[in-house]
Image 1: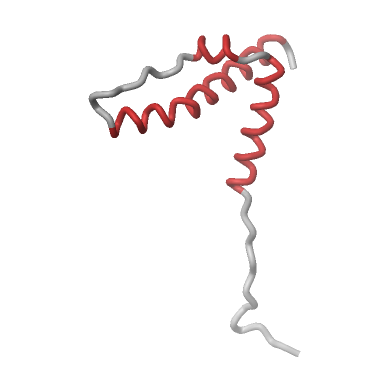
Image 2: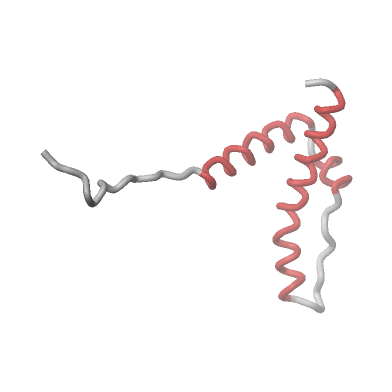
Length: 84
C-alpha cells in the first residue's frame, strides 16, 4: 500500500471511529434538547489515539462488520424432487 492509500485508509478509519463515538452524544442531544453535549471532531479523535490504536480499531471494526453481514443459507429440498 502506498503512502497516499494508507493516508486515505487512515482518514476513513478516523472518520468511522468519530461517527461511532458520537452516536451516544447524538442520541443524548436528541433526547435532552436543553442539555446538549459537544460532538467529537476528527481532529480530536486523531489527537486522542495513536497509530497503533487506529490499526487495532480498524481490525475490530472490520471483524464486527463481517460478523454483522455473515449469513447462513439453508436449502430446503425441492418439492418435486424424487426421493429414493
